Amino acid sequence: MYRLASRLSATLPATRLHSLGYGARAYKLTINNVRIGAVIEYRGRPHVVTKATHSVMGRGSAHVKLDLKDVVSGNRFTERYKTSDSVEGVHISSKPLQYLYHDDEAVHVLDNETFEQHAVPIETMQGGEKALAFLQESTPITVSFLDGAAITAKLPSSFVFEIEDTPDNVKAAANPTAKGIGYKVATLAGGLRVEVPDFCVKGEKIEVSVDENLNLKYVKRTK
Image (cartoon, rainbow, N blue to C red; front, side, top):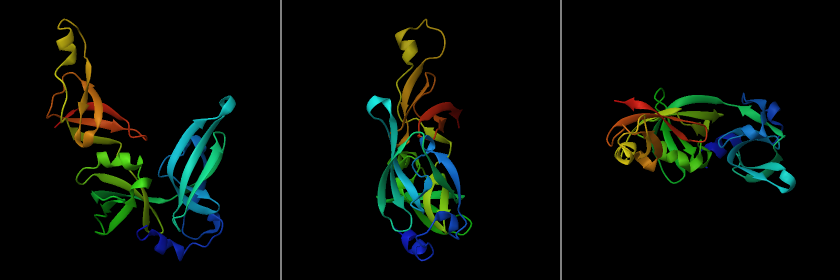
């Protein structure tokens, strides 16, 4: 678990999160708003959400199953909640860092002020493994820290990608007299796909917006 467990285990006793002296503050968070990478209090200790699964049980009752990892010990737990439940979210410090590279387990980032490198577990990145396709050289990533150790990270809300492949003007080919703008699917770096206007062509750079679930939306062409 890199340096996280060793750095925290010496400072965090097994007691209520509110009484711990590392500066984190708790707040109410409804279950439906819990996302991968969120840090919540569970059994009095901070845990990172590694997976959130929504399901509908018998008679239409909905539940959310959270897979959790203790940021101190690395122990894993699974807990099921009703959609009406809430948990204690943990306020933690965050800082924009620069993406360097990733391996099978972590995304490695650089603090340009201190030149210190940190490793963020892939499973606690926003979107988990799905986030890797977005990472380009020097991508800015907002990293959250607990007691000086990186525990989770979020991607920017927008990216610029080059179109690696896209069909010709689909609408014009199908109906040359049609008016208005048609849309087609473009393939971007990392295998990402997004709908773009017909006038976009291979080799152009476009800006796309990215939501919390890492869904892409075309914004505009760019240089």
